[in-house]
Picture 1 (cartoon, rainbow, N blue to C red):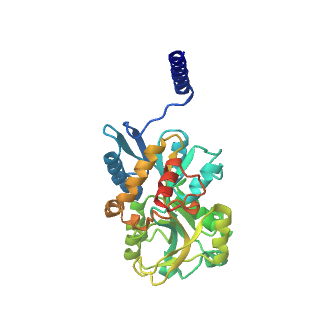
Picture 2 (cartoon, rainbow, N blue to C red):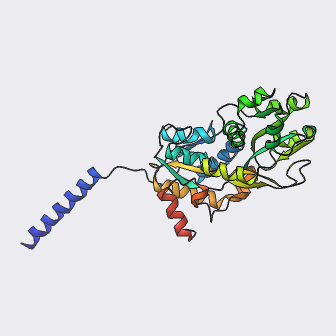
Picture 3 (cartoon, rainbow, N blue to C red):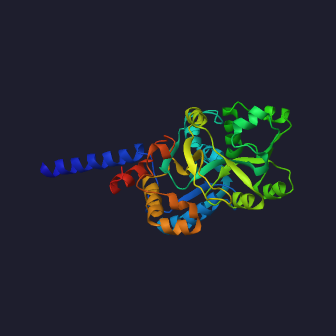
Length: 336
């Protein structure tokens, strides 16, 4: 009788186990090889450099046979779209673009809800403005009051630099059409064309993204005297409330002739992932990033800003929910 009951219990247990296998979705395990695609930006960009060194670190941390590729696309606006379309597994973004994408705002037609955050505060970015010294203004408000026809340069149309330039000018009540009606223009071009254009006198000012010791900004400041422009507090508040930008300071002495701090909007890079990337994989790569901070910084100097103890904070992630694998890591470290 006891033997019969034991056999019956064994059969029931086996049936339950097999039943669970049919209802629990399969998931990769960090013990098995994985294939990851990390979305960054163009070849030669800071993001591509950072992705490149991270990819090599991930390969050494993940199981043998894993493949990890750095994709030379698609920037702070496009990367969340790649994740949403499952054309990438990880990708860099900025807190505000991550928020816009997750909630379906501005450039994003619908919410991208498969986004999850891994780490924030990876570096420092600013939207910097400057004009040639001889222009003689210290604020964008002066340009508006005097209706100066300045030729302002930013990056290519559709880039975050171009969008931010438009948002900053609109905060002052200046449209691209206004600028053109005064005899000026908004010029959208690549970094390599900016310095020659400034030397030739084809540009009067700049309004675009900037990183610490940015090579193009460094060349611009050396090639011709320029004056950096700070944003007034009401403008900063408006840009924060409407778009999620934060007040930041470009420290004095960062570029030639910059004798004072420049108050503007700024933001750090954050690393996002798709929600279906296994928890163990996210845990492993986040651990690898933290343990190899100095190695990443040696190739990408701006990574010096990364503080793993605060990398989970919502303001650095645009309010995008943490990936469970990342949450586990931060809690185990006692940082969250």
